[in-house]
Image (tube, rainbow, N blue to C red; front, side):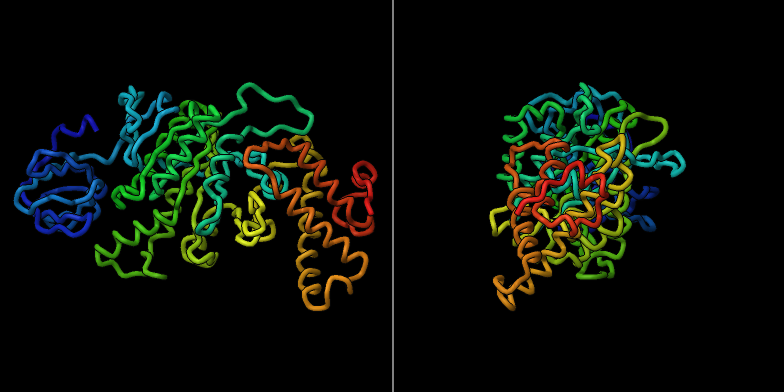
Length: 471
């Protein structure tokens, strides 16, 4: 950062270098989270921050790594403040590295002000309960697991699953929701803050290309920490991205969608630093404070009374070995308001997006749908589809034992419903943007494959209006 050369105490020489960590003695009074400059023997400045302080000693993490640093030839300058970044609306349409420096060839944005990357605490009484839905154009989300403005709804994926395509599609298509039949508004698009942690170069190139070709890049600020970038930088990247999101939402009154991937890479970096520091490990070697660390990120979302803006979070993580009980998805599920789970079996059937409806959940969905918000039958149709698809799984298990030809007529109609649900409702092209009315109409077409007597979650008025039985 351009203002890092100002003031602060300076110390020559290091006591120890281990991985991305350096230990400095003779520090005097320094503070936890204080920003430092590490100046190597060639005069190159590397940013860092204080991880731990003791009597006349400080442990510092170096964002750009410690390669080439010498014990005697390195100087440390403590700047006496926490890590801050410049924030401005002009950062939309720009691409930055993991610590907020431009990497798109453009100039440093003119800062409206500098903001602490740790954010500002929000008084719980100032929060506004989320009640407006977001239309993603994806039927399995909009109807079954509706995303609400101000919600944090993670996507649980697995290695090799198309979370990249799904994230890019949501970024391109996300709109402020409206009731069925209501005309759109001119300000219904979101500002997008996209934070990538530990992603491969081809993934970063895919997002750049996808957003550029769709024209969405003009309203997206991208913060990229690539796989070959220092792992310690990953601990800063989501905080830098959320700092800009808070400025856009709470100072500028914009609705902001924050997409963070891959949170598993973030947690791996957290574990790496914890191990280097010699901390007592918890489950699978992760630090015991990982829950509170993740909460410090996820809770920087929502709406407040003093601003018309909002922050909605879509964290994306890869479940190691598709294990939903792994510490990263497990703790994330405790903190957030539901989850969207991607299915490997649906991917193997060439179904995109491979959203597993049954284990997915949006806990705030009930508050963002219904009369005046989406359509009166939205909740009931969703519950009916869920119940019917759950019944399909039981019938498929039975059919694998006795054979499909031995099933009753009703059970065979459920199997037909299950196949159509996966190949017509869940399945949609990566460029297909369905509005909610189209999704609801498709849902009733599928429910019409079932006998009328099986529709126990919808009202008689719903059936009379929308149901047309098919045999």
